Amino acid sequence: MKTIAEGYTKVILEAENPGQIIMRFKDTASAYHAIKRATIAGKGAYANRISARLFGLLADAGVENHFIKLLSDNEQLCQKTDVLPLRVIVRNIAAGSIVRRFGIEEGTAFKTPVYEMNYKSAQLDDPFMNSHMAVAMGFVSYDEMEHISRLAHRVNEVLIKVFADCGINLIDFKLEFGRTADGRLIVADEISPDTCRLWDKMSGQRLDKDRFRRDMGDIIEAYREVWKRVCGESDENK
Ligand code: TMP
Image 1 (cartoon, rainbow, N blue to C red):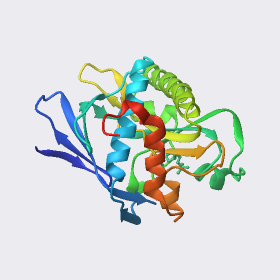
Image 2: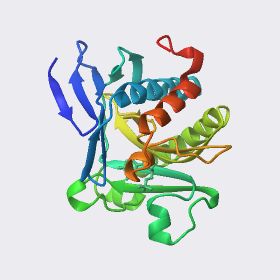
Image 3: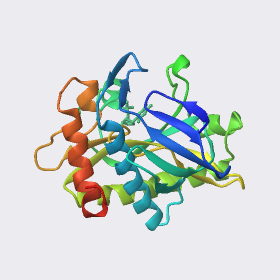
């Protein structure tokens, strides 16, 4: 299978059907623009399965996304899209960069979700971007920007409930969007403990990539815990 693209944590491969791609999740972790890197055996499989389950639940809730089916422990089949060069970050509780940038105390609950956007460019340190810039730079129209906002809002609603039902607080997460061959914008990439902050409701224990970013240890145990709670009986390889 021919490689279309390779990042720090995933490889995108051609699929038999030219309208589809295969996402292969690697066992690598990276943070701070890949200044910090490590191999964590088993991480790829947990991220793959958790993301597959979440995208499946989003589809059930009417949120169109690129996921088609799981292929193996580390691979999933997805619809091929042109992924926009921007990330949408949704925050329910203050953590991570917003704490540093705005001096907000970690753990502060926002009155309404915070939506942020950044431009995907490691070289430029992923600068902040707003909807006017996204339109001005020709990435999307204002109507599409509105569609993206609605999708981000809906994804947050669905995922807050999915995680709450398994005893996890959804603190924040990152979304990416892809344009299909016929021009629709759908949710793409992955949603996993690599791209979300997830805190255990009872203990506040971090169950996400912050364990790697902040050298907290027990990374794979945290991913396994999320997989167990989110995928549960639905996962045939449990
Ligand atoms: P931040 O606090 O570093 O801005 O990140 C907010 C959330 O978005 C956090 O759950 C991690 C996720 N995220 C990614 O998955 N990829 C990225 O490139 C960025 C900037 C954030």
